[in-house]
Image (cartoon, rainbow, N blue to C red; front, side, top):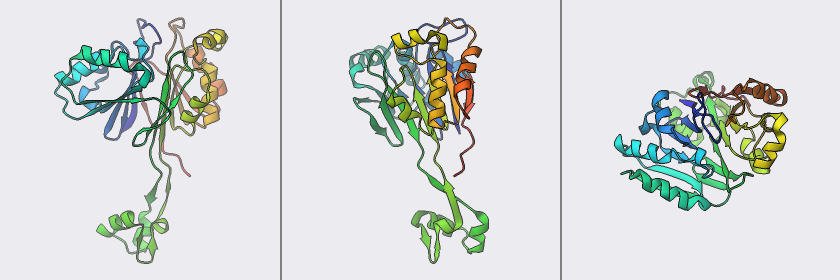
Length: 295
């Protein structure tokens, strides 16, 4: 299963209808918890997300609305007896804050700290890129390798059945038949998480070709001066990011409490998003990955 579970969508302060940040990406057998703000443990309960589903935690930066939920989540994982290792990725400059949050949890957990100080791969298929915020901040990008889809008709015509199919996939050739003769290219899916940033090259690199792009939309276009001062995106800028990247679905989030109705922000993003589908996230939403793209 691949889907995004939205646990919280507020920036800086929660509101009556929006919790602090928090997102769980279900990616096959992995569960990536991104930016768990205050109250994330309770939101996981509301969303029906078990602590045992979390295998990796990713922090973009150490502002409180993106990390103050970490102790509660870790404590809950320990209470539930989670035995698998949990990787915790975060900017190296936030080491002191992260260690303090981890210490508060007193969690008996196989937690493995993975600080990063520059862009690049941080785990198989997972990479980071620097963003332009007021403190060191990195966005995340998860990429599935390209593969091939087998065509049953061509396999049958070539007389390849049973265990021979697996051998062909592993070795790439079986006698005179190559894998390319009985399959078509299958593009890998891509997920991007762009949070707390002004427009920058790092955001564009993360978003490039994303099937599902989660982007902050803190301010309306009319408040572009505030967005610039606080190093955030407007809704229109988020839409433009999705269009330039050729993104499939754009999920807007991290809304300022000054906007009780975010429909106008969604409209501003959609006006500049090109072919991308635009979703203004609400707490506890579930967003499925778009259908796999064709080559």
